[in-house]
Length: 352
Ligand SMILES: Cc1cc2nc3c(=O)[nH]c(=O)nc-3n(C[C@H](O)[C@H](O)[C@H](O)COP(=O)(O)O)c2cc1C
Image 1 (cartoon, protein in one colour):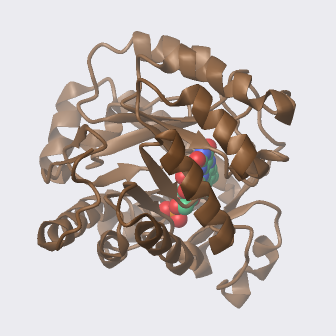
Image 2 (image 1 turned 60 degrees about the horizontal axis):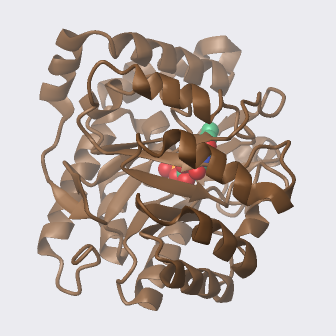
């Protein structure tokens, strides 16, 4: 057990009487404060940073393991993440309109299953606020910045393209890549934007200057994923992020059945196998032509290595960070880099 698991995690899990969002907010506040302390950041960097660079969709990543969307939606603690070992950071999901998200409680830990259920509902300060914060950054964060875009709850589905475009235009100058989030289960109707016609319209509007990646749900059938991939290839998407949280409740420990019954998306260990299968399917279906960011249930370095083995060019984690802390980032980056270095052609990152 690491110090994080033995000492830090139990304290975090007790905060707010065990309310998972209280622990999240406390952590984010601490990391935001840390972001302004260069000496502390340098000390952390010396301990956690991993150099294993690779170039994917034309962007150079210092190592292949990034922070998944949703952890730092408004980019509050940007400088802290690279110091904790992350090779890239995806902020958001942000929406054109600031919105409060769903009523609390909306985030639940399922420790017996190393899982989380969330129905946050894109709580965020809006694209313009994120742009202002990024404008005000004293210096670049030193790793690529991804920005995840979603649809505002107040915007009807038929106006979704305009809503994504508003956010994209506000943030275009700031992101090294953009993720089109059409797979969160917590905004009514959002997942239908994965359908051919909707996605085609969305990508036609967004693809151009910056790499645009599409984040997909693990609950799609292979036929639906294949159709989505056709649109991605036809419209020039730079890649796919697989996967978002799942509506399935397979793989939960009996002790977690009550919390498992909460509405929302499930992440963590129960998602590991399915997310990896989706990555493998995308890789084989596209013959490696679309770079993949593999995400879902990376709880140990071996999970990260197997994601790369399945065809992921990059890996992200969220729930693993909650249960394992920064040591997981470093170990996963090393493991993923080792597999990538020994990978045989065809290389999914080549030529983009
Ligand atoms: C509390 C929480 C909030 C999330 N918010 C977002 C989000 O805003 N946008 C997004 O694309 N994914 C979001 N996700 C999904 C994660 O980015 C990731 O795809 C998913 O949790 C699977 O990875 P994991 O098992 O490592 O957590 C969220 C996940 C959690 C647990």
